[in-house]
Structures are given as C-alpha cells and as structure tokens.
Picture 1 (cartoon, rainbow, N blue to C red):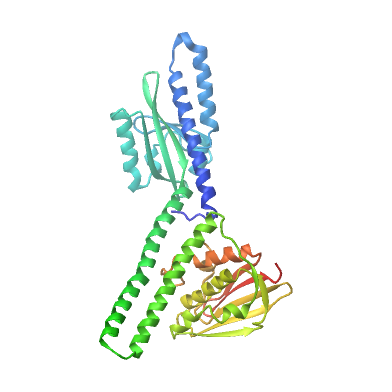
Picture 2: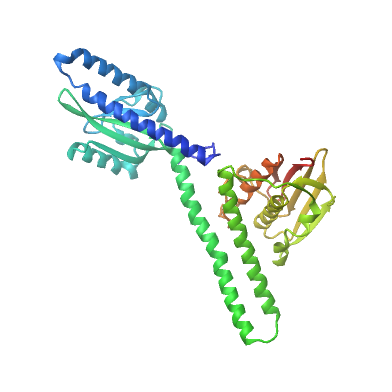
Length: 397
C-alpha cells in the first residue's frame, strides 16, 4: 500500500471527523433509497418522476463520496466525479464500461463476488463491505462500500457509495500493532523481573552472606522495574497528550539537579559511561519531572541506536534566551529517511531495518513536552558519524 506522507496528528479529531462522515453517509443512503423508489416510472406521475430524477442526479454528481451504478454482472454504467478522482482518473469515460473487478486486487475480488451474490441472487436489500481498490497509478485505496438495489424499466441495478477510509484503516492498524507491541514490551521486563526475584529469593534462603551474585540479581531487578515504570509512564503520557491533558508544573531548578540523578539506570548496565560538559549550574523555569523524562528518553535513545558506543556525552549550553541540552553518541548514525520520522508516534525502525524494542513513544512524548515548554527538539546525524539529539527550553517562564 502506498505510504501516505501526511501523518495523523490528532487521533481524537480524526475519529470525530470520521464519525461525522459516517452520519452523512447514512443520511445520503436514506435520501438515495427514497429517490430510487420514487423514480420508478409511472405515466400518471411524470412531473414527480422528473423531479425525483433531478434530485437523484444532483445527489449523485455532487456527493463527495464515490458513487457508481452497476449492472448484475458488476459492469459500471455510471460514475460521479468523486469516484473518478478517488481512482486517480481524469474522465468518467475512462471508467464507464469497465467492471469493478478490474480495480480490485486479486485477494479482494471475493468481496465483490460476495456482494454480487447477496444482492442479485439472495435479494438482500443492501450490502456493506470493506475492501481495497487499485488506483490508476497502481497504489491502493481502502474503502467502505455500501450498495443498494433499485429498479428501472424492469431491470435491477446496484447503487454503490464508496468512502475512502485509508486513514481510518491506518489508524486502526496502528492501534492493533501498538497493542501487540505494548503487550510484548510489558511482558518482557515482567518475566525477567519475576525470574530474577525468584532466583534471588532462593539464594537468600540458602546463603547466609550477601555475595556479588545477590547484588547483580538485585541490580537486574531494579533495571527491569525501571524499564517497566518507563513503559507505563509513556502509555499514560501518550493518552494525556491525545486528550490534551498533559499539564506542566513549572518551578525554577538547576539542570545539574536532574543530570546527577536521571541516568543511573544506564550506569548500572556497566556498558556506558556518561560525560557531562558545559555550564551545569544554568537555571530554567520548567517542569522538572518532565524535563528529566525527556533527558532520560534521549540517553536511552543514544544507548539504543549506538549499542557499541561506550561514551554518551551530555552537553549544556546557555544561549541568548534559552538553554540547549544535547546528548551525543559515537554510534553508526541514523539515515536521513529514518531521521525524518524519529519523532513520529509509534516509529521504531532502526538503520538496519529491524524493529527496536520499546513502544515508539519516547521521542514523540519528548517532542510534545518540549513543544509545550515553548522549546524545540531535533537530531543531527550522519551515517558512520554518530548522532546528537538536542532540545532547547526558554530560560524565562
């Protein structure tokens, strides 16, 4: 399926919009059924018939949904401008005379065959389906299809309304994928935590002296608890952002207050060491807990994208009216293609094309937190030269 470049920025608005469109679709179907029924030819009611035909034609041509009329063998005998545009053509004549199956991918043809059987062979009054159609350029558009039958001069035709639900389906697929990922990501640290605590408990019962093994198991349990806690916080913050309820509790604090405490979980892994540079005494007025969360996300990201880079550098710079904090690794860097999507929600693809662990929410939430502080966030990276993730926040409130 063709990737849509425009991202879903606000799922709540999208859902509300689609709800309104569905309501309009139902109303349009009711109007069309009424028009179709009243349009049956009767010589004694010719003026009324003409009026109904005109109304039917107006609805058909002006609808922003794709409309078509088909015969029993699924041959298209009329289309409206919206359907022509939906399928990527310029003229009605390009589509009239073809069959709807000509625009159906092989694995979707069965849906139209089911529609044909339900409507014409089993006399169902209407039929709904969700399917994909092939556009002129070969890309796919996902559609919700509603078809009804009507009679004209003794012949039965199908009237079909086609609604583009590509974005709606993409949102649903994202939600399903997210639930699967979240379930896996939450289960992994819980399983490790449970196993570690069970082993630690057995050792404590059998060994009177605390050993290095005890300490290692306790540290592993703490790391998994931290990881689990971060996942839960990400889930909660993502929900608050969607609902517009992410609040900031600002106070004045030194950046050194969070730099000294926020990244102990990285040091416990003993794979990395942190180097801090710049003026750590700089003060800002911000939400200390959320800025700490941003910094943790950036450091975690450095560890994720540069697992072989032992040093992670945190630098603080005082600019004219704001403070800039940068987190630099010496890893393989990030491609331009991936870099442009790093702050998108649910984005988890690394440079090797493999899925990274995590929910794909950390950088998205960080960008929202910084934006609400009136700051900026970004990344500078070249393949083979490492990456620098940075953010700025105003010095004054």
